[in-house]
Structure formats: C-alpha cells, structure tokens
Length: 141
Length: 141
DNA sequence: AAACATTGCTTGCGCATGCATATGGTGGTG
DNA sequence: CACCACCATATGCATGCGCAAGCAATGTTT
Image (cartoon, rainbow over all chains, first blue to last red; front, top):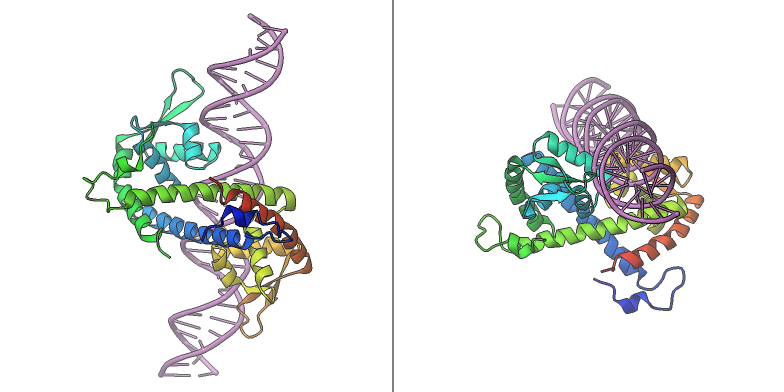
C-alpha cells in the first residue's frame, strides 16, 4: 500500500501526521523483506560459492560492464558502501583472485577494479543462485 | 554505458527463468531505497537523539505494546536481529536507563524487556524525527 | 612556481552484528 | 527421583562496516 502525496500533505498534523502510520507500515514491511532477502542470499551465496552479498554485488556490477572495469569510487556508490568498506572489499576479492586493481593512467590517484577470468566464472555460477533466490523470496509474502 | 536489465535477460537464456531481470531490478531498487532510508535515519536519530536505528526500533515496539513490555525473543524476531545482538542491544539500552530487564515469573529462563519512563519520553521525541524522515525519504523518487 | 585546497584511495580504530557455545531453567520419560 | 532433550538468554570470538585521519596526485590561486 503506497501513500499518496495527498495523504502526506494532510493538514491534520498533530503529534502524528496523517499518512504517517502508512509510511511506518511500509517501512517495516520493507525492512522485513530486505532482511529476508539478505539472509537467504547470505546463506546460499555463502554456502554454495563462498561469497558474501557485497562480494557478489561488486562482481555483478563488473560483469555488467562492457569493459568489466569500474572506478572504485563509482563502485562504492553503486553498491551503497563507504569508500573504506569498498577498499577492503576489493582487497579481499583481489586476494582470492576474483578482481584486479589497475592504476588509472590519466588520474593516477584513482584505480580501476577489473574482473579476472576467475572472477567472471565465479560470477556466472553465483548469478544463477542469486537470481533463483531473488525469484523465490523477493516476491514472497 | 550501462547495461539494461533487458540485456541481461536475453530470451536465449535458458538457465535464468523468465521475469528474472525484473526481480534483479526490483532488488537493486529496494537496496537503494533501504540504504537511503537507513542512512537518513541513522544520521538524524543519532544527531538529534543519540539513538541508532535498532535502538529506536526496539523502543518503538515497546511503546506500541499496551503493557510496554516484550519477551526478548519476540523482540529479536520483530526487529530482525539475532538473539545475541538483541541481548547486547538491551544491555546498552538498559545501561542508559531507557529499558529494564524484568524476570519472567512463570518461566524463569525468559526475560521481559520493559520501557522506562525515560525510555517513553525518549521514544516520543525520537518518533517525531523518525516519522518525518520516513515521510521525506521513503516515498522519494 | 609556490602555496593551498581538493580529490581518490588506504588505514587505524571502535562498534554492532552473527555464529558457536556456555549457563541455567523446564518438561517429559524411565 | 534421575535423566535427558529442549528452551531462553548470555558471552567469546571473528568479521564487516563507517568515521576520521593520512597520503599521494591533481587543480587552483596568486
């Protein structure tokens, strides 16, 4: 149930603005669904492929890209992680050979993160699980 | 150059069931919204009331309850936290006097977590911020 | 060109979380 | 009563995260 703009703008605003209950309900429902999907993904990606959710998300972004490379910065934003968290995540992925760090020629502060062949294979395998989990638990009520 | 969902779910894709592309898109959108709401809540509840998201969620459940008390177990499930995480969360809230642990008479393994007067006041204040943030960022975009 | 501000990434640190396990309480079965 | 499987919470430990600070490269101002 979505809240219409009219609901939100109702003037009968006291301690609890009109439409508030709906928003809270929507938020709780989103939290529940988010938690359900995360825990299912965490478990299945972890057990079957040794990947965490964030790991997969990064591989997924890289696999989507034509050149299979992203600027670290853009990657962080895309997967909703802080710069520092992404830096360490790339560390872990690089240590297991799934991605490589690559200096950026025109701006030597930046780095490109690029998918290795191993990474591409891992992603292809994990993507099947990922899609299956989403199809199973995301629409579930 | 971004790859559209349609690109990912080419009909020639036997391994991926139909509708898969849509689910991935929906999941990414949910992640984005969830992250946006969490970061806004984290910031505003933290700055204005010294509360984290989980802290508020617990207070909110307690305030909702007629008796202002919940079994620790049920609380954990309701706020989507592990039993251990909730135990420590209650520690922190109890240490700042917002809740109290209360032995359960008929089953002395269990505990009730109950809202103190301070906790109720804190919740009332924070709830305003919480609702406002939700109304602002949840329906956005 | 020298000094300063800004950007992009890394690192030190503290913290919240989950998993596995310990501790203590309960109920059922012999 | 003794035992045992089970349940509800607490705690040790490892991990991933964000914030703040650091560092090197780049851009800007004079």
